Length: 190
Image 1 (cartoon, rainbow, N blue to C red):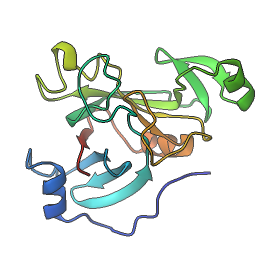
Image 2 (image 1 turned 120 degrees about the vertical axis):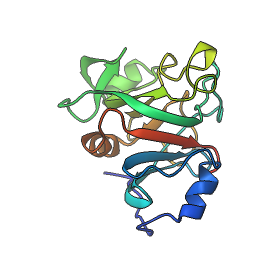
Image 3 (image 1 turned 135 degrees about the vertical axis):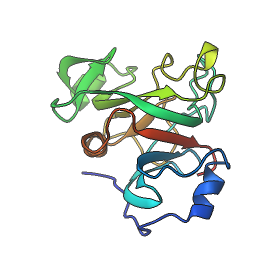
Image 4 (image 1 turned 180 degrees about the horizontal axis):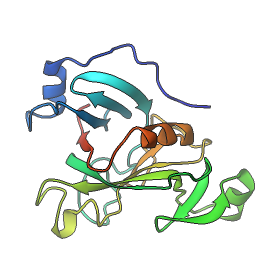
């Protein structure tokens, strides 16, 4: 089952996007991803045209960039790496490598405190030196990803340790349509 939200808008207005981007840059003309921390939503866009739309889960601790904060970093990023192509939906990844396990309620009961990274990973790299790149605010070194999570976990509410969690069907679909280098903006206001 997918939790892809029905998209009622085929485009997002340039004024709304400019507000969500905080006036930080022009709207990219090609494909890009917009993460809304406030709304717990993700838009895959081409310019202002909505290609797909998902309900997600960002950090329980809210927005923030510091290493160890378990917050979701804000600002411009890019997809650094795509990990998990061809894995089964629900495949377990640890340290960005498949374990050979596939998530199940029984496996979850065996490891109840594991932060489950499932199906696919889109690993992010910050683009803004001093904000989300370098030093103790480096998103890549913080291992900030888009990744799958057990379908029993709620979406639309902050529950992660900093990453952007998605339903397994949703991360697989997004992964197939997202290239390395794709721009990503994480907005506290969207």
